[in-house]
Image (cartoon, rainbow, N blue to C red; front, top):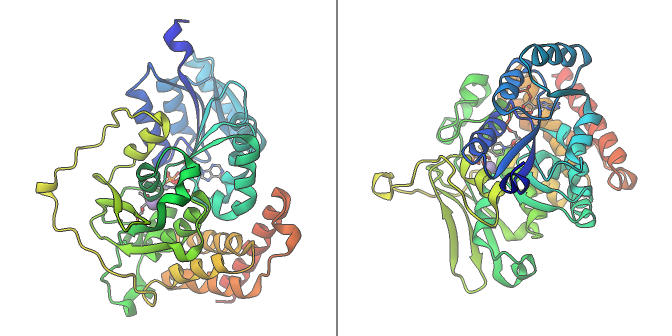
Length: 398
Ligand SMILES: NC(=O)C1=CN([C@@H]2O[C@H](COP(=O)(O)OP(=O)(O)OC[C@H]3O[C@@H](n4cnc5c(N)ncnc54)[C@H](OP(=O)(O)O)[C@@H]3O)[C@@H](O)[C@H]2O)C=CC1
Ligand SMILES: CC(=O)[C@@H](O)[C@H](O)COP(=O)(O)O
Ligand SMILES: [Mn+2]
């Protein structure tokens, strides 16, 4: 092994078959001298995982079920690869905390990513967080694991990366700098749609995001603006800010990715073409910068930048996220679980689009978090499961 390769960052990409996972592999492949893919994971797309293994030759790959894992192992051996296939949720946690892993890209969608994120945090890894739901569920408990484990938590979500890029490197200085932050939101595909027609929109219409190509769950979240609600909660923890210091502003062009309003009213913003490879490249290379593959921003070709206040009647999900953040600890885990169940039901054709926010509202009303449900990962998962059952019941009642 050359001296150069000894210093490569050894990266585990959890959720490698998704949109963030694929973009991460794209950025890494541009810099083989800096980054090494050591582990990949998928959930349902074993064929895509096989192709990724052939292209990136990781030491480990992971799938949730034994049969699919065995089949993949056979295909990899036949292709002459030494990749070892691991099975199940526990294996994801082992990989995230493995001594031969330096950095973890958390790109699993949903609360399923919480366990591996905590494992990476406890093992003191560079934790590159796209999986916002893990932080929304874990809250203070998650941040405590990061601190106690000595992990470096780096935001990948474009808005949070933007804010992070505007702030000084020394986190201790953030409170002296920040007055408040402004998260920009595109408004999604239904920003101008007649609210009375929203009950009839289809999953494909909801997933047709105007600016970003993303997985279906986050695309629906953008359409309800629950995505921005989750991001408000995410920002509360990443930047240690109270809810009233986090504003949301609709900016349909998604060119300004978010802003920091400083104590002297100077406003710092990060701009760029809407391409997730920029925040991914920054998380991988921080505090340095590397080529990301994203197109350069040419302001002469950009349409006029617009801004508007979010209409909470059109987007009740955003308001629910504020309510959960201000509610008893654990309320954001209830919000997230109900939303995951409702979005899955909508995508499967079993719930109207407007039923998503209604389901979340009903669950926030009826599921009260208990103190012992926010103090351990077992408690958080029990609360998550309880809220999911309630959401299923609400949807079944119709
Ligand atoms: N896409 C984007 O541009 C952005 C995404 N994010 C966040 O990043 C995360 C990933 O989003 P995105 O890439 O769009 O999502 P995708 O749906 O495209 O990908 C999700 C990934 O997670 C895997 N996965 C799904 N369910 C499970 C599970 N239960 N256990 C383990 N793995 C699972 C999928 O495997 P498989 O494909 O094999 O089923 C896939 O690899 C989300 O939290 C999202 O909010 C944040 C900002 C931007
Ligand atoms: C790319 C990214 O970070 C997404 O979370 C994006 O913000 C979604 O767009 P919305 O602003 O429409 O939610
Ligand atoms: Mn975002």
